[in-house]
Image (tube, rainbow, N blue to C red):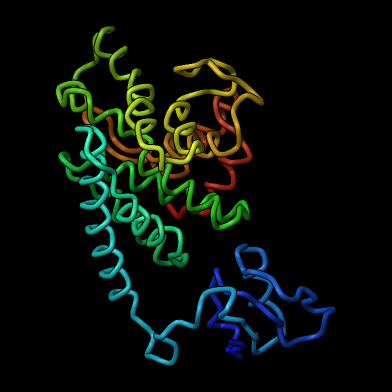
Length: 301
């Protein structure tokens, strides 16, 4: 069905038949709106209306025409969404560890809530995950990394399927830590050599847990196993370097490190966004500088 809607009501996932302006102002026709670049271009165009085809893409939101939601209400909704997401994530990660059946439908709902959120809601998500409780820290870290990876993937104009893969990878990347003792994960004094080696084994542990589930995409397995690799080969567990480390893994390493740097942990205060970005930017032997800069542009201190 063809529907004519105000351009302010468009959302990613819709199939655009036409943007009602001259071809010189916006010449693209008949396409799935799955990139931020096209979304922004439509909003910036002189068109007032867009024609969409609901047979090939998302339908018009049923909330169109309703009074706008206030920032306070939107933040409350974001907090409620994250509470549900953390519970679902916690349940499924524990299921993975104990050898239970993975309910991908639950995780898919979490991925959709994160990947399809608008910029303001996404910012609320990140702010809320920084207010962590000790017992939930690992789950909240995973959720935060998923949010950051989704935001960065969108900013890089990756397609919607790839953004969803990035979010899912962030949710699952640290599952191996659930096989380690809390005495290691929450220790407030320096780790011993044995404890450090155990902690550094969490990527392989997580990979071994996830590979048992055929439904887990290979990109997610790759990110789980390699999110601590470094461009100069000094990372672990494989010592990969340079071009051996693909874009999706590079995104994961940057987002994982950023969240850890900006979150207070036992014996370590958190850093501000600017300090964290500066620290990572100066270590281009470890992190992809272009990705550090793109992520920094998305986060408010």
